[in-house]
Image 1 (cartoon, rainbow, N blue to C red):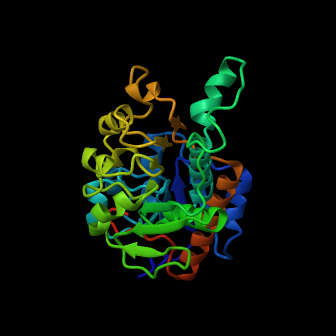
Image 2 (cartoon, rainbow, N blue to C red):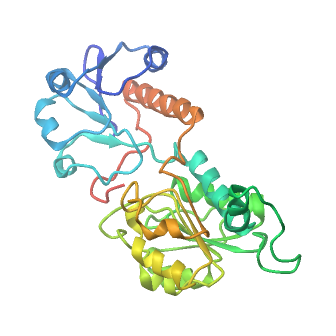
Image 3 (cartoon, helix red, strand yellow):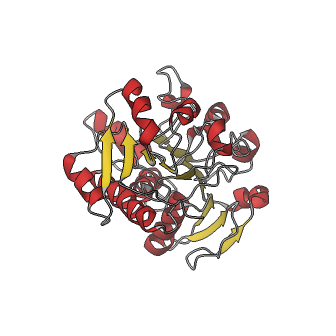
Length: 329
């Protein structure tokens, strides 16, 4: 059910520092009068909430008591693991930014994978740091491998998983097999789509295993020692959605004992990982600092998405990316 705007101007309250041109784009999305009020601090934010129809940004459970008119909350990110328990029972409609950040994240994922398979991270970056450069192995050795014809197994076919699947299949002729908790039509670029129960069968088939699921009580630390031990020794693990999906010490063990060929990590259970963490010891690991979704283009999509939802809200139409608050995504 779409939230219904009240009479009078639509009042959006936020602590996010929208640029003036971004505010104008949001307001121009509808003929209705839209007021975007940016609170400079938490105290004024709570004072402004009493007249808010819409809130933009993450909202704590205690804030709900200050917002009697609230109908719609646009969450500031894609992941909903920080959603307060009070929001789950509150009638407010919550939307998030699922799929909005996927282009940059999937490009980073593919970049990490190529750094690993083509030996860039393992063989050539260490040489570069020493101002040296010579070929490693020979034209027939497995020091450099190809993605063509390999199998990518994706856990979570939301925005990140779908973008990775498209790029891997159409760009590198990879076979895609996947799992997802939601019932959905199988995309044409995915050969097999299963329920999460298929994970034990999925993992041993993968040349590349991608963690792209949302973080929920069911998915936390799902990539554990048993999973890593059942991977091919030639397979790679990519973590692109939430760091707490995998057991970092189990991953360290898998890397140290050669259970898997390497890992690409944009996320980590503790961010940033402490400098003494063993993950930094492995040349067959490439990491970024949970920044894979960043870019100027992301910001444009972010504002365009919110503006379109404002248009829909003003017209009484269903909003995009409505969160299932009980499922947590």
